[in-house]
Image 1 (cartoon, helix red, strand yellow):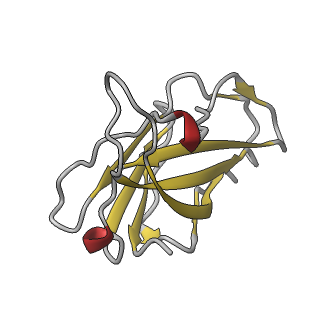
Image 2 (cartoon, rainbow, N blue to C red):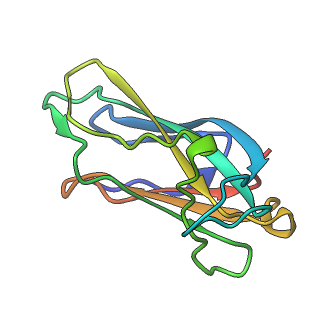
Length: 134
């Protein structure tokens, strides 16, 4: 099932009633120390939601979220403890909505033009959001 890209402040809607949305965006800098940490690196936290308006449950165990910067290059995910990331997981029942938090190292210079791609199952094409993060 396919759909067209939408602006980052709009909802991706599929004909079967499934809807994805970027519910909230916040920004921070990493403060964690130690292996794998990048103190001072800026990142964006995206709170995403999926609403299942279809007639079938949706497995959320294989959701992949990718963010591309203004040049179309993938930005690194951030797993800092302060980002409080939480993946989609489990099965989304009919009529239910699930939320998740993902963090990405989006520099200030790219916040005005990003692409967010959410691949969540093998029935629907990826949800694509294009625009600014604010």
